[in-house]
Structure formats: C-alpha cells, structure tokens
Amino acid sequence: MDDAGKKPKYELVDMGVTGEDAVRTAFANQIAYCEANGAPVTARVCAAIMAAVESDQQGALLERVRCWQGAPLADALPLRLAGGIHALQLAGEAPELGPIYSGAPANDAAIVAEVIRTHEARLMPWLDGPPQTNEAGRSSNFIAAMLWLADRGLPACFECLEIGSSAGINLMIDRYRYDLGGVLVGPNEAAMRFAPEWKGPPPPDHAFAFASLKGCDVAPVDLTDPAQALRLKAYIWPEHTIRFERMEAAIAAAKQRAPDLVNMNAADFVEAELAKPQAPGTTRVLMHSIVWQYVPGDQQARVIAAMEAAGARATPDAPLAWVALEANRTLHRHELRVRYWPGGEEEVLLARAHAHGADIEWKAG
Image (cartoon, rainbow, N blue to C red; front, side, top):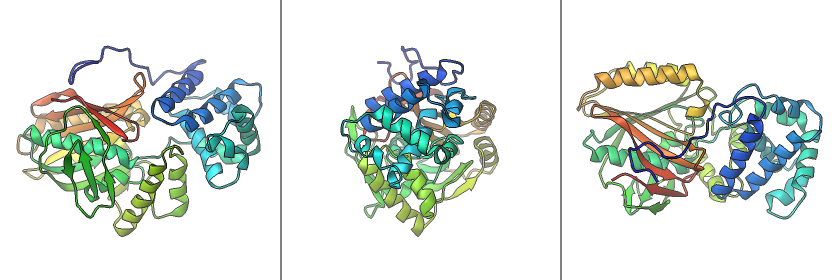
C-alpha cells in the first residue's frame, strides 16, 4: 500500500469513461463496490438491472440507460435506478421485490425486469439526477481530519464550507459524538454517536471548535418534508439498517434547528464564500464527501482555481484547508485526503474508509 502523502501505485479507474462499454463497466464496478462494502442486496439489484439492460427487453427507460449520454460511472447511473427500485419496495408498491430485499434466493433478473416494465413511468425520474445521501457516518472522517489539522498547528476553530450537502446532515456534525480509536469528540448529549472500527494508530487528540458550518447543493433536500426524506431513505443501502436509524436522528435534529444550507452550485458557492473576510484565529475548511464526481468539469476547474488563489492569500493566523472524502473505484474504498495553506499544499492521504463510515484505516503519522 502507498504511504500517506505518496502517489498510489495502482491504476485508478477512469470515472469519466463514456461510450459503448461504459454502461456495463459502471454496473460491474458498482456491483464490486457494493460487495466490498457489505451490501450484497444492493449488489443483487444492480446485477439484475444490468441483466435487464443487456437483455432484449424493450422500453424507454432501458433504452435511456443503454444510450446514457454522460459518463455512467461518474454519474452513479446504477445507483440512480437502484434507488428508484428501493423506493418502490419501501412504499410497498412492488411486493415481488420482497425476496431480494430479505436476502432470500430468487430469480433476481426476472423480478427486476418485470418491475422495470411495470413501473417504468415511476422509475424514469430517478435517472434525472445523482443519488442524494450525505451519509452521517462519513462525518467521522471530517472530524479525524480536523484533529489532524489542529495537530499540525492550524487554529483549532473551524469555519466549514461543504459542497454537495444534500440535506445538510454533515452540517450538523457539531451535534454528534465520536469515538475515533479512543479519541472522544463532541457533546455528551448528542443527536448521534459514531464509533467506527478503527485500524492503525489513533488520530491526534486535540481540542477544537466550530466557528460555523455552511453548505450548498444544487437540489437541497428538506429533511422535515416526509416525501423528501423518503427519497433519501431510498438511496440507503438496505443492508445497513443503522443508516435508517441515523436518518431518523438527522430528521429530528433538523426539526430542532435546520442546517445552514443554500441552493447554489459548488463553484458559485466556493467563490462567494472565499471572497468573504476570514476572522483571525480561524481555519477555513472546504469539505466534501462523494461529491466531486458529480461536479461538472468547468465547475471543478473554478473551485480549484478559487482554492489555490485563496490559498496564496492564506496566513498562519487565517489558513485554508481542503478536506475531501472521495471514492477510490479501484480499491472500492473511500479515501480521506487533505491539503492546507500555507505550508501544506501537497495533498496527504490521511485514511481509507468504508463507504458509510463502518471502519476507518488511519494512514497518517
């Protein structure tokens, strides 16, 4: 394995592949990703969808998938349709899915093909946008990164800016309690508690505080709206029952005090926020989890340019950091990578983690 801060020795999967074989490649990769992250039911659903796509079954939905106009892996095409099918199961509208979701043996391909045929109109809108998850369990990685940044000498008062915030679940991390390899962070009276299986040395034990938490999304989700909350639940992999409990806890927390979430694209948000004055004694942090692949290329370029320009202006008393938790589609793990200005411009790999926070393998010293 590569050490923290060094470039990987494996060949990365190209998320932007398009063309004739790209759809099959995306489904095959998603199936492997689900299996590697303890989600056999979701893997079965994705495999059954792929079987329908590769069959001679006709229909507008399958034709749209077969002729996908974008990059199907970067667009999370398999999970878009898997989310729609899960929504039908959650609503009790497709009881024939029962054996699959209960983990019982079944003719998955035949069942899913019939569901696609019968519910095509209901499923079609699920192809219009990427999955909305913003899984709370991933926030353990953000906390670990802030512990590391504080230990590096950056001001331990964080002004957090999150792109792709979905419902803002990770904008409420100041209300959660964490046990990260024995390092305890957060209030005792917490809305949620996280204790991922920790591998490797513990992160630095360092006190820190949040100055603010603000995020953006191009289609923000209102957790207090039951219909919108149901859509979020449909994207939860059904094997991970604790995630449904977390969603209910997040809904309750949002009803008490809504997260600070605005409707903006990533580039506009980052440019606007970085242009604002930064209080001395605070560290401004851009953070995101499983979002970068959905940001259009032109916006990615603008975010990078804005961060590097702001980094050039950063000072030891008002530094800037970039914390990213994104998928490694070769290793089927998420990678926590950090940069900061001034003095930490070179990207560092801090950890590899389970897709939804079940475990964290700490790689940093």
